[in-house]
Length: 113
Length: 109
Image (cartoon, rainbow over all chains, first blue to last red; front, side):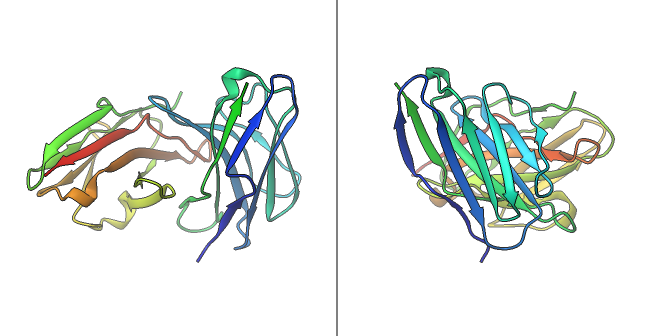
């Protein structure tokens, strides 16, 4: 079974804090993605990566950055958290060749006070 | 720009009734199309893919290129079908999967 593990299930942070969300996958997938999930807005792509040290902006990259130093790990960074970044964050991974099917993590619910 | 529209935020039907969840996508070549589902307290997961042309849990989805639609259908809804459903086209030119805003399906007993 493909596993995508997000390190924190729930986080509470204060405005202005730096936040790290970690995601690890154990199936040697090339592609990794960060989405945020908000009621009525669905899933919006923040950043994605097709290879180590490579990153591409999604539809809403402002206020976020990412890091992919190893194939299995993709980190989402909020340099200075703001209340409008309160959301559920979903990490996903997929293979380049074949099905293009995303496998999701359980999500990290971030609350910024 | 690639867009996907799911016009219904909430769809409530009685058990045993037919279900149709609508999805329309913008035309930019020929995207590959997916439906994902999230049951209560579970991870988002793939329900079905257009390219597989299969029926999963009684659901099917027909691609209509003329109408640029990929509606999800099931002839007889079951209570366990209550979940959040997302339509997701993959546009190969952008190499990323985008998601609709989702439809919450509620099956009444």
